[in-house]
Image 1 (cartoon, rainbow, N blue to C red):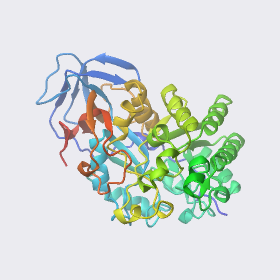
Image 2: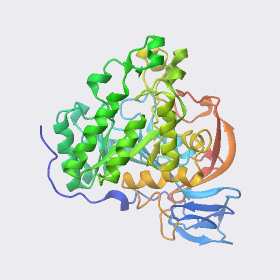
Image 3: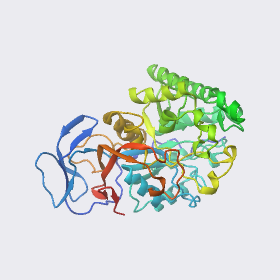
Image 4: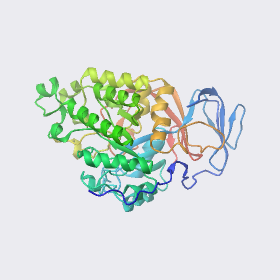
Length: 448
């Protein structure tokens, strides 16, 4: 095994500005309620021609007036780990399509998952993703694979990639199966100021499974994955984070025990953050009884006790981040028997509506989990999340928290349509999204 190419500390990418997309005109968001990490207050928000917030107060005016009446004006949402399709998976999605869906869903920044073709495991692929994202409707920041080819053997050149702005390193979908590799990555993370993401799953226990090992897998004759496959990997990752002091992000946790272990470790001083998904807070493995591949996920849907634990942890803030888990799949990848179908669902346009609707999160908690906490973890807090203050980049979302709408997958901006939430009533709809001051969504319609 070899480590990163060098031990020098890379500069934190959060203050690095993208090429300005500002419209060159001043814009005011009028009549709304500002809600950010400091709380809420009635105020208009004035955006200057440079794409930065020029004033926050009452009675503001500008060349362009966008109605925010009855709405919350908040920092734009930030997603950790969305599959954006490029390079190599364009039959499912392109960065342009995914970023449009993201902006319509209120996101101003998205971290691109590294499981592309080829994987994001070197500087050339990072640069390719950044080039493909020029002109996108949101900022795209690539995550990188933890190991070359996501093979689990040789670490990627972490220092070189960190210097390009990569903040998160993860072997998507499989986690680090070799404890020596994970330990070394966490040690380098200390010096580089980056975060090691881990999708915790013991491959030997999970191999061949497609459903939670329990009552419904037995009834349906589906090969199971025990909860212990996740929980043993969580134990190991937390122990190594404690040993090294490296920053660890545990992704898509799905069991009550996993969440409890992470919370206890954090209380004991381990630098660990946690994310989960809407589906793991809303659905159980009972949904598999129709053998519908729309309900196949990794990790698999769990029983009611785990679902309730995930939902409670989200509401109480014991889970830091709610991710979209955007995983577009072409029809042929889902129109297969359940155990052969690809896992995942699209989620960039629905996660906010699921959070405020079926999950029942209060707006402040939903925005914490979807905006300022993921911005901090992704190293984007200099431009996204945080506070609406004069001089800050105007990466903003205006959302109506009471608007109710029924999700129609065919009306989404994503190229793919795979979702278990078609027909669900959601709550909270995006009215406007501003990216560096440019209105990229106005009255619910994309402008790019």
